[in-house]
Each structure stands twice: as C-alpha cells, then as structure tokens.
Length: 434
Ligand code: HEC
Ligand code: HEC
Ligand code: HEC
Ligand code: HEC
Image 1 (cartoon, rainbow, N blue to C red):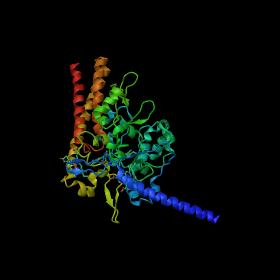
Image 2: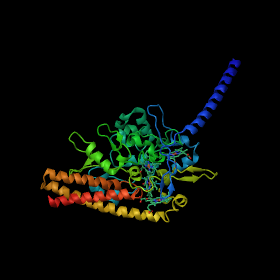
Image 3: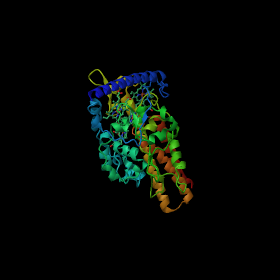
Image 4: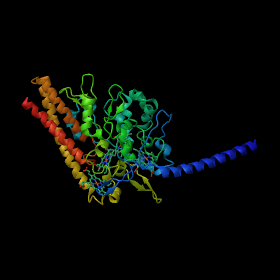
C-alpha cells in the first residue's frame, strides 16, 4: 500500500516536472512567437503616447460558471476591493425633470417624462432600478445592473431577457461587480455582455480592453422588438456614428408597415421617437475625438494609486478626472494649464446650447400638436414634419443623455447640436410654407 503511494507520488512528481518544463517552454514560445498585438500600436495625439491596448477576452457561455462576488475577492485584492466600495461616496442624484422641465414634454408619455434621476455610483445601481418611478415588465432592464443577470443570460441564452423582472430580482445578490468586467478572473478584462461582440464585429481588436470594459454599458442600446434582447444599433466602429445609428433606426430596423423603430410615440404629435441612452463609448471613441487614441476610459476615470508599500494598484473608485487632483498633476497638467476651468467652460457652453435646443424642440412639439388637433394639414404634410422632429430630437438626445456634457468629444457634440438645431428649424419653417 505504502509502496503504491510512493510510486504514485513519484509519478506525480515526474508529471509535475514535465508540466513545469512544458509551462516554461510554452511561456518562452509564446513570448517569442506572440503576434504583435494588432491594436498595440502607439498612437500619437498631441504628443502623448497610448498606454497599451490589450485586447479584451470574451466570456465563455453555457459553461456552468456561477458568479463570484466582490466579497469573494476581498482577501486577494484588499485595496481594489476597498476602492470599489468607495463608489458609495458618489451618492447624489439630480432630478432631471426639475432641472430640465422640457423633458416632460419631449419624452411624453415615456417613463422618463415621469421620473428621471441622474446617474450616480455603481454601488447604488440596484437600489436605483428598484426605486425609479418607471415600470419594468421584463428582466431585460437588469442587463446593465448586475452580473447575476449577465450570467443568467450567458448560461440560459437570450430567452432570459423575457423573464419577469420581479422573478429575476430574487436572483440578484449585488450590483455591478468584479464579474461585470473580469468574469471570474480579476486582472483580466473579460467582456461578459455578449452583445458587445456583435456590435464590434471585425473591429473587436481595434478597441482597448479598458474601453470595452466600460463600453459594455455606457453605450446606446435598445431592446430588439419581439425578442426583447439587449442589442446595440451598430456592427462595427464606423456604424457607431450618430448618422449611422439614426439610419439604422430609420431605414434598417423597420416594422411590417415600413415604419422605423420607435421607443415611444408622442400621443399629441404622433411623432415616433427614439430614446437615446448614455452613448459615452460612441462619443468618446467617435469621429473628432481628441483623446480616443491616447487614453482609455480607465486612464481618466480610474488611474493608479500608491498602495503605501512601494507598489500601485488600479483605482476602482470611478470618478470624474476633474475631481482627481493626483491624476491631473501626474498626467494632464503638462498640456492643460488649468484642466478644470477649461473643461467647465466647455461644458457650460454645451449645456447652454443643449438647453436652448430643448426649448426649440418644445416649441416644435407644441406647434405640431396644435396643427394635428386643428386638422389644417394633410397627413403627408404632418408626416414630413414628424420625420424631421424625430431626427432632430434624436441628435439632441444623443448629447443630452451623454454624461460628459461635451467633454468626451466636443466636435461630435457640436455636430449633433448643429444637426438638431437645423432640423428643428427646418420643421418649424414648414408650418409657414405649407
Ligand atoms: C454592467 C454595466 C456597467 C459597466 C460595465 C460600467 N458601468 Fe458605469 N454605470 C452603470 C450604471 C447603470 C450607472 C448608473 C448607476 C446609478 O445611477 O444607479 C453607472 C454610473 C457610472 C458613473 C457615475 C456617473 C455619475 O453621473 O455620477 C461613472 C463615473 C461610471 N459609471 C463610469 C464607468 C467606467 C469608467 C466604467 C469602466 C471601467 C464603467 N462605468 C463600467 C453601468 C455600468
Ligand atoms: C466596471 C469595471 C470593473 C469592475 C467592476 C472591476 N474592475 Fe478590476 N479592472 C477594470 C479595468 C478597466 C482594469 C484595468 C485598468 C487599466 O488598464 O488601467 C482593471 C484592473 C484590475 C486588476 C489588474 C491590476 C493590475 O495591476 O494589472 C485587478 C487585479 C482587478 N482589476 C481586480 C478587480 C476586482 C477584485 C474587482 C472586484 C472587487 C474588480 N477588479 C472590479 C475594471 C473593473
Ligand atoms: C480624456 C479623459 C477621459 C476619458 C478617456 C473618458 N472620459 Fe469620461 N469624462 C471625462 C470628463 C472630463 C468628464 C466630465 C466630468 C465632470 O463633469 O466632472 C467625464 C464624464 C464621464 C461620465 C459622467 C460622470 C461624471 O462624474 O460626471 C461618465 C459616466 C463617463 N465619463 C464615462 C466614460 C466612459 C465610459 C469612457 C470610455 C468610453 C470615458 N468616460 C472616457 C473625461 C474622460
Ligand atoms: C500631450 C498633451 C495632452 C495631455 C497630456 C492631455 N491632454 Fe487633454 N487635450 C489636449 C489637447 C491638444 C486638447 C484639444 C483641446 C485643447 O486645445 O486643449 C485636449 C482636450 C481635452 C479635453 C476636451 C476634449 C474635446 O473634445 O474638446 C478633455 C476632456 C481632456 N483633454 C482631458 C484630459 C485629461 C483628463 C488628461 C489627463 C488624464 C489630459 N487631457 C491630458 C492635450 C493633452
């Protein structure tokens, strides 16, 4: 018996040594033979060099995996865990309907016209989805809120989007967490939301992992009619331009009557509207970006922190770079003499113009509602105005719901506002010319 055990031990030792040698060999080979990261080129924008662009991994589906939660990793990564918990500090909600009463008209009768609070830290996302005044019928609304639902989709397939919202609530243990960005392997960026893969197509390896981690949720999305599957209205980087997204909703995703996709229809004007959702990824990496090639979302919103033991760790408290003086001093001030003032001035201009266009769109909505009520125009005439009103509001919303108020890409922001203003004025002009 003992002899057998010794034999077995020897065998294991031999296997162990062989494996060890193999691992070293593979290691050496992979370094020697590794293809140059196709996206690993160094971009030079205004003299700054990009900090590495590792390609993200894609989550394995139907693999029987269960979610490991943040607390499971606390022992291995105490500083990262503590910084993730710090997201509790970002706890303020702005009531958008109070700050921008135009929304009550522009989003009528959609849920956002009844309750619409600003975003706050990831820590609160489950509380916020449960407390919003907007109704949730299906589980699809959990898509960007918890890895427990992400994993359910990955393990059971797209029918999970059709589950009852309340039933899924019972399965939710925590909000956005390690699994959302790393699956069960912290340290590696893994895209766990599979729709992201389809939405990038052949451009997958052109986007850095640290952009994709955030670009799983900070994107424009919709629920596919019929199946309810969370989908992004694009198939590569080129089709994420707002013009292409609008074309997709207007001309490609049409119903049996040839009508473009709509999230809701204003009952007074009959305009079939598209509700845009936080397109940070599309804006930051879109045409006109200054820093899209130099920095990733993580560079500006995470940064690294000294651990007090001579090392550093990636900060997981996601905050505004304008509130991160350490980052500004170390990274930004060499080019931006006063980053905070510069960006606040930019945002103020964008906010003023966005609000002016909201007023113009309210004017258009009310004028059109009156025209419909009075019946002085033909259906064709009204439909032509409706089409302009829909497109105008889409471009305005693309800016309004983007969370950086122009900071991510002031050129694209300006382009969208120009489009919104021109189209609104064109629509208003038609009342006189008809
Ligand atoms: C799984 C989806 C998901 C991922 C991945 C994700 N976010 Fe978020 N993020 C959200 C949601 C949802 C909110 C709003 C939470 C709330 O208000 O309850 C939010 C809020 C935020 C906020 C606070 C916004 C504010 O106005 O205070 C910041 C900053 C942020 N995210 C940055 C990031 C960055 C940077 C990344 C990538 C490292 C990232 N997020 C990845 C879903 C996600
Ligand atoms: C919202 C997305 C997100 C969440 C949630 C998240 N991480 Fe990360 N994590 C990242 C990104 C992005 C990076 C890479 C930062 C960079 O490249 O600058 C990263 C880097 C890391 C690293 C690599 C450190 C290094 O120096 O290479 C570790 C380890 C890690 N995270 C652990 C965790 C753990 C543990 C949790 C949960 C307690 C967690 N992360 C939650 C996005 C996330
Ligand atoms: C070059 C730096 C930079 C990069 C890179 C960057 N952002 Fe931002 N982001 C900003 C600035 C500046 C603001 C405005 C912050 C403020 O108003 O205090 C902002 C605001 C935000 C906000 C609103 C939160 C807040 O605190 O106001 C979110 C959410 C966000 N960014 C997500 C992202 C995502 C997702 C990416 C990657 C696709 C990204 N950002 C890339 C600079 C950056
Ligand atoms: C190598 C120089 C350089 C560095 C370093 C740099 N920037 Fe910039 N940044 C620029 C230039 C150039 C512009 C174009 C606008 C201008 O003239 O300032 C710009 C514009 C911006 C904008 C506005 C983008 C737009 O579309 O208008 C933001 C936000 C920004 N930078 C944030 C940051 C942050 C945050 C850091 C540090 C993490 C940083 N920058 C570091 C050169 C730099």
